[in-house]
Image 1 (tube, rainbow, N blue to C red):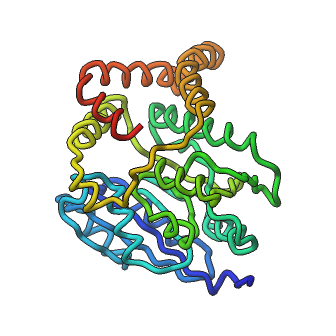
Image 2: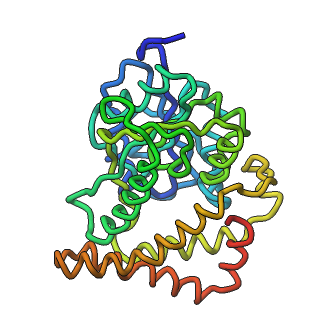
Length: 316
């Protein structure tokens, strides 16, 4: 039965760890949302030693501290957030996500209210004019991924694109129906919960082309490589006990089709060459960075071959 927006509460789950540079903008724009329903913002902090918690507390949001949570990644924090909240919709927002329009939440919720068979809705990544050219280069890659997925959808209504089977984008401002997420075991890792939703026929989703967010994940190539170096380090150390403590069971293999894997590989390989052409035409430094960063990531893998192999075997 249709329920007015005002009756539908939303839980916003934000994992944090030393996020003082970004959390204020993230929370400020979240609280600007013109949404009639209840907005429950839950921060799951992994033991920040900077001003993250001090800043967050000024916004009156709920804070749950689990020191060491990031030892197994922020995905465990998302799952813990699910267990401690109960609204019908869950909004997965990262501390480096900044919502652009004040209507984003109401637009993401609307199609899920109108059609109970829709379980996911996502906004578009936008380029932040105040961010670095390197960060925007990464954002362009995200934009391209969503646009490629949208080609398989159909125009739904008022800027929405309907997808019978969403195969990308279950983090960074994705809104999910709680009953769908819980029916497949909850959040463990974005690609895993998405694949379980797909196997269960629950991956019908919406892309909202009128809603946007900034993803400020790295201001320089060095910053980006440091983040990936840390990810390689702790992903390679995951144990079965860690997974049982913080993640739901994901023993089933991913069912991502060979075609999807081939498309992803082809997109990654073609990205530097496309960027070279665009840089030649425009002279924009954003495109220059798009040439550089895939090769930089490859260099990181070559520097840590054993660790990378462990990650590949466990998570891909």
